Amino acid sequence: MMLLVDCCVGPSGISQGLFVLGRYALRLGLSTRAGHFHKCPSFCRLRSRPRKLVAAVTQMSGSDVATLRWINSRAVLRELHFNDGDPRSVTELAARVALSRPTVEAALNDLTAEGWVEEISAAAAPHKAGRPARRYRFAALAGVVVGIDVGPHNAAVIVADLRGNHLHAERRSALDLETGDAAWNAIHDLVMHSLDAAGVDGAQIRAITVGVPAIVDADGDIALTTVVPDWLESHLPQRLRNAFPASNVSFDNDAKLATRAEAAWGHAVGAADAIFLLAGHRIAAGLIVDGRVIRGYHGGAGEIGANARIGWNDAVERFHRRAGDRSVDSLLTGAASGEAHAVAAVNAFAEEIAGGLATLILAIDPQIVVVGGGFARAGLPFVRALEAAVSPYCLYVPQFSLSPLGSDAVARGAVARSLDYVRTAEMALTAA
Image (cartoon, rainbow, N blue to C red; front, top):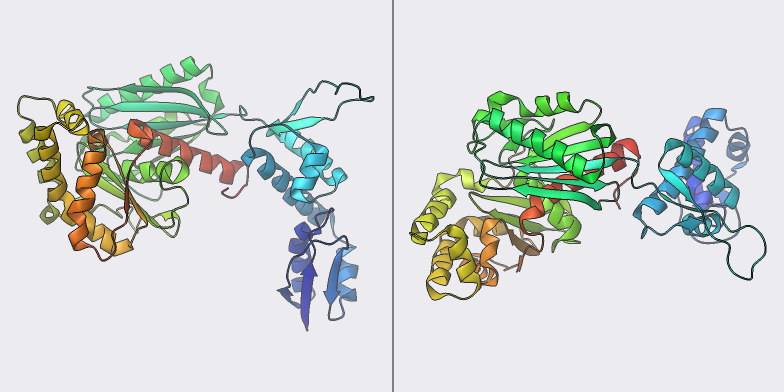
């Protein structure tokens, strides 16, 4: 027998009960097919002789009631976490999540006990009698997350609350971190200094993500790197996990994290298919396909520069030679201001890397290519040169854009990954 559940979404939020209805239908040997959802004040219209099912639902066990209560609490938590940050009253929350006031109050009690929600004292409204409405907000300081960007010459850390608001950010440059020990010392010192500056301690860290110039496996460990090979033997991930045993610690490829940041806060927001080009001391790319950052089977998706025939590494070396006695930074900023010699150098660099970038464009047909990394300091002249250089090789030329995230892209992507972990693994929420 087929049971068609035509479920309403009304003031009591009965749509949340579809999960339980489905479980009992399967237990009773009934097939189910969900009908359409619509707003109405009624319960649910259950067609094809539903009496046996309804009788079972009215006799739900304690575990099923607890499950439904937990589902309702996640709906309230999701609303408070992803809203604009303003406190909400019970009435406002009930309207937003389509649940009854008693159900919302029970959920808020649970979430407050869990530490995810806090009640805000509210002053009584003028000229109104009675106690003021209780208001609640997400407890953004129920913990912190840390995002780290480390390479052979630089290290950066961002400490953020559970909404992603930065509590402290710091970058150190001109470092020598070629050895694993030097990298570990720099990471640990920078994290501890940043925690102190943010006014928090290590016990409050829920998740730490580190972006590295390496291929990182699905377990968050460094699998392969030609940039800093000594890091492979230094066991950096395990050393960081030992230092912060109560925190989730994961490493990821720097280009993929920068791509994640671009999808969360940059010019790739809402893009189903996009490429982030990280052009600096080396060139790497992150790919977004169907709205997700692609990792690949081994974690090496987008590492087209590993093919020596693409010539990306050689192009970086030639650009350094073109700088001559000038610093690379000076040449890049000169290009941004329209200096003829600097623009010519940037144009030549764009031509040399265009073949590899065009191959990626042909592979995924992106809506947009976002350019970041050190070469982004050359500004729009570099972006325009890249677009002109790849156009002859592409069937469809995507939009080209300069990343608005600057040198913080990798660290911000690490923060985004840490937040995703807390939301899914600890708060049991899905993405916004």
